[in-house]
Picture (cartoon, rainbow, N blue to C red):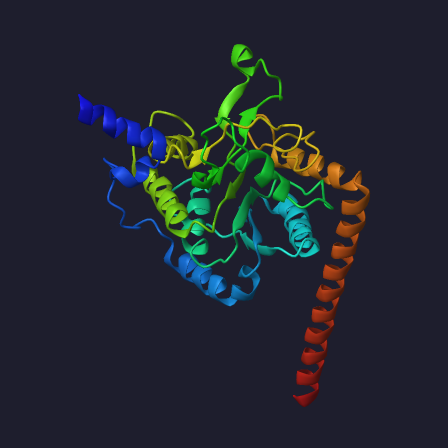
Length: 314
C-alpha cells in the first residue's frame, strides 16, 4: 500500500509520466506509406533552409497543393512577410508526404523531419486557411498567455511542449454547460521546439497512430487526443481564446474552416474579403502580387529572347 502511494505521489509531484513507462500497444512504424520522392525533396529543402532555422521563433505553414492553392497563393506569402517583419524563421510545406491517407498526416510527417533541424525555441504550426490579421504583433504573447501561464499553484509550465487552443464557439465561461467546445483545434499549434527529444517523441507517437483503427471520423484528431493520454503533462488544449485565434472573427489569427457545406470557393472568397478589408494586408498583398507578376513577365521575356536567338542561329 505504501509503495503504491509513493509511486502515484511521485507521478503527481514530478508529472513526467512519459518518462516512467513506455507507451504501449503502438503499431510498428515502417514508413511504408511514405511518398519517397516527396520525403527526399523535404529533406533536401530542410538542409538548404538551415539559415532560416537559427532564430528564436519560427512559423510553419501547411497548404495542400491539390485543394488549397486558390487561397494559399495569397495567405502563404503573407505569413512569410509576417515572419520577415518579426525576424522569425519560416517554412512552408505544400507537397503531400503520406500516400493513401488524409493530407493532414503530412503535418506530423513534416514535423518529424523539421523539428530536429531547427534551432527555434518556439514553433507555430498553421494551416493556410488563416491570415496574420494582427500583422504588427509578435505571436510570442500566445506563449506567455497560454503556455507559460500557471493554471494552478503547482502547474509545472516547464513540462509543456505542445499547445493547441480549445476548439470552442466562443470564450463564454459557460461552455461546459452549453456543450460548445469540441476538443483541440489542430489548425494552429505552438511547439516548444527547444525541447528536442520530447517534441520528437510526441510527433512520432502521434504519426504512428495513423495505423491504428479508430471509430471516429477524424482519425488525425483522435490520434492527437490518444497521444495526449500518454504525454498528458506535455500536451494541452485548455485555453479558450476564440477572440484571438481560430474563428473568422478572431482579431489576431482568423481561420476559415473547410468542411461539409462550405466549398473551397467560399473559403477563398471569405479570405479574399478579409485581406481586402485589412489596410496592411491589402497593400502588402497587392505589392507581392505585382512583384510576382514582374518576375513572371521577366522570365517570359528571357525565354522569348532565348527562342529568338536560337531561331536566328538556325
